Amino acid sequence: MSVFHDEVEIEDFEYDEDTETYSYPCPCGDRFLITREDLENGEDVATCPSCSLIVKVIYDKLLSVTLFLASICFASAVDRQYISANGTFANRRDYDSISVKNGGRWGVWTWTDKCPPGSYAIGFSIRVEKYTGASDDTSLNGIRLFCSTEQTNNIMYTVESEPGEYGHWSGVRWCPRNGILRSFQLKVEPEQGAGDDTAVNNIRFRCSNGLQLEEAGGPFGEYSEWSTPCERGGICGLQTKQEPYQGIFIDDTALNDVRFFC
Image (cartoon, rainbow, N blue to C red):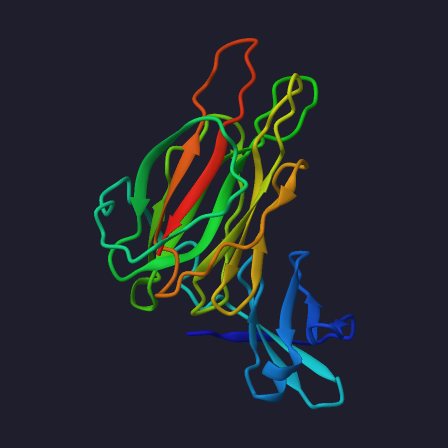
C-alpha cells in the first residue's frame, strides 16, 4: 500500500510540446514523467525511474501542480528478497525472442537465463567498466534483469547470462508500477581496426507504458533501431554473446550482443 507522507507544490516543471509530457524534479536528482493526456484522464501516479519514489499529481487544468511524495508501492528494499534464478527456469516456455541488428562480431553465445513462470522483467541493471583511455576498455560487461509479479513483488528473482569480469553493477532502473520491459536498443561502437574495440556500450529499454529506461554506460557508438516489442507479456529472459578474456596485450570487448525472450 502506498502511504503518501509529504505534500509539496512543484513549480520547477518542464513541458515538452511535441510529446505533451510534463517533467518534474525528484529529490534523487532524476525526473518524473507524466503525459498531459494521463493527467486529464485522471491517471495521476508516476514513478521515478532511478529511486522508485512514487508521486501523485494533483492537476487542476491551470498547470498548478501538487506532488504527493509517496513511499514505494513495492515492498521496501529492506523487506525485498533477491534470489538468483541461476538457470533454474531456463526451460520455461517462451513465445518469441527479440533482437537488434547492430551487435558486435566477437564472442560466443552463453547460457540462457529466464524469470520464473508467470513473471516478467520489471527492471534492470548493467555492469560497466568506466572508460579510462589509458588501457584496454570493454565498456558494457553484463545485463541483469529483475523479475516479479504483482503477487510476489517482495520476492524478486534476478536473471543474467554470463557477464564479463570488468566494471561494477549499476543501480536498478524500474518500470513504473505494473510496467514490464518490452523492447530494447543497443548502443554499439563499430569495429575500430587497429584501435581499441569496446563493442556494446549501453542498452536502453522501453516499458509497457512507453517509458524509456537507460543507465550510464560507455561513451562510444550509436543506438540501433528499436527491437520489435514483445507481443505477449514482456521480456522474461535473456542470452548474451560474450567475448572471453583474451589475455594480456590482446584487445578485449566483453559483451557483444544480446537477445531477449518473451
